[in-house]
Image 1 (tube, rainbow, N blue to C red):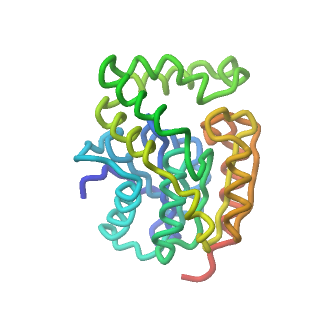
Image 2 (tube, helix red, strand yellow):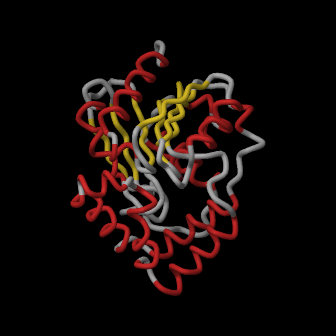
Amino acid sequence: MNLDYQLDGPEGAPVIVLSNSLGTTRAMWQPQIAALTERFRVLRYDTHGHGKTTKNGKVTLAQLGEDVIALLDHLNISKALFCGISMGGLTGLWLARFAPERFYAVAVANTAARIGDQSSWLSRARAVRQEGMDVVAAGAADRWFSDNFRQRAPEVVEALCHQLTHSDTEGYAACCEALAAADLRAEVGQITIPTLIIAGESDPVTTVGDANFLHQQIPNSQVVVLNASHLSNIEAPKSFTAALIGFFAGERHGG
């Protein structure tokens, strides 16, 4: 198994898989861990080309989803809960559509059936390959967090931007290319498993409108809008975690 992962929480508890956003690592979920591990076995992993998971060939959305299935198989986990944010959320939508038998329910945060547009992602991939990660790190704080949070918690913002600067360029660029090609707008209406959609009211990347589109398309879904921007689990950790636990506690029956 070439995905780097960690497991926390009581053995025998229901498993929740957490999937990070583009340009972050599994450490981004730290604000959720204390509360989640009280009742869940928490499986965090570094997405392809991120953190300690090395890049291996071309990256597609389907491959990002299949990585999760392979990890569950590796750990002999037949069925789990899933929460992903941004790119991790898009991975969750793919899993809910194409591997629903492996999940009780999914939560997708700050995501969309199609994130951004193809030309922007391809130009970003080119830019980081030519100029390095500083070119995206410079604008990351504005994309990720509200003005209020940047003033309130500068050390949190600085640490994440620092980590982004030191991310693997090729891993990041390859995931940009995966996002350029990823479009589930015609597929999300086929999702039948319970789905929680979390949006940030001031998110400029994946908007409340994107969340509402998902809600309209996915029959068994609900939306929660948090007072946050794009990385809502970090900006509004208590309300994010409460929404997650409330949803998953109600959706996992037996098993």
